[in-house]
Image 1 (cartoon, rainbow, N blue to C red):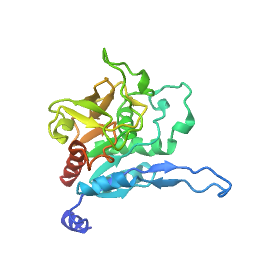
Image 2 (spheres, rainbow, N blue to C red):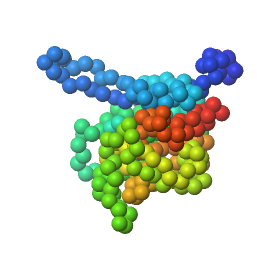
Image 3 (spheres, rainbow, N blue to C red):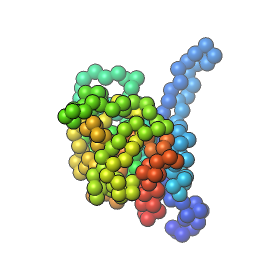
Image 4 (cartoon, one colour):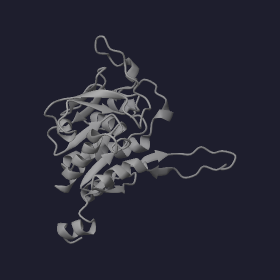
Amino acid sequence: MRDLESYARALGGRPLIGVAPRWNQEPTNPHIPEHLAPSESNASYFIDAILAAGGMPVQLPLLKDPDDIQRCVDLCDGIALPGGHDVDPKRWGDQRPYDPHMLCQERDDFEFPLVLKTLQADKPLFVTCRGAQVLNVALGGTLCMDVSKYPLHEGCMHWRHEMILNDPAHPVHVQKDSLLWNCVGQKELIQVNSSHHCCVDRLGKGVKLVGKATDGVPEAIEVPSARFCLGVQWHPEYTWQTLDSDLGLWKAFVEAAKRC
């Protein structure tokens, strides 16, 4: 494209949203005895949410070369990271043994530089579940790898944080005057779904905790110095059609990308 106006026309006015892919290796079985190539893919709900909010999603390839990752950032108006595998605890120096089947080095190797390059370019970044954890660790933070061991508020028990995707699982307190607060319609209490067993622990540099479940588990972070940088622990791609607060997240992200 020769200029921004022709670029916008080509996309029908929709900002281009780069979506980091999931990575899956199918095991062999009696019907498929040889290893198939790993698949890079995205959940249709995640793509649908971006389209509904007015964006044009494009799946990014899992890249290793820093220059190629930078080209992806330069190409896109905004970047989104979905959920998936656990983040490798070695990323913040925790050398204790951890189940390798829960990890995905291919995604870690791509998403960590992708997040940092997006922030350096000051382009909108919206990350969910694993993506929020990657954001915090990329900026020097740590994770709690077992939510059931996260400190509780006095007089509380943990909500069920694993696998309630299509309906609200628990409420979240939203910090007033935060980016999150503005995205969800300036509400200080919202309902969210849930599917995770890890969460943010020590905050990374410049990261602010702006949402907590009522049991005390961290649920949302942002980077106030960025144009738009928001991470939520839940999965708003499943509930944007039924929860106005989740639709608001996608709309605010895409609107920020339009202004790039």
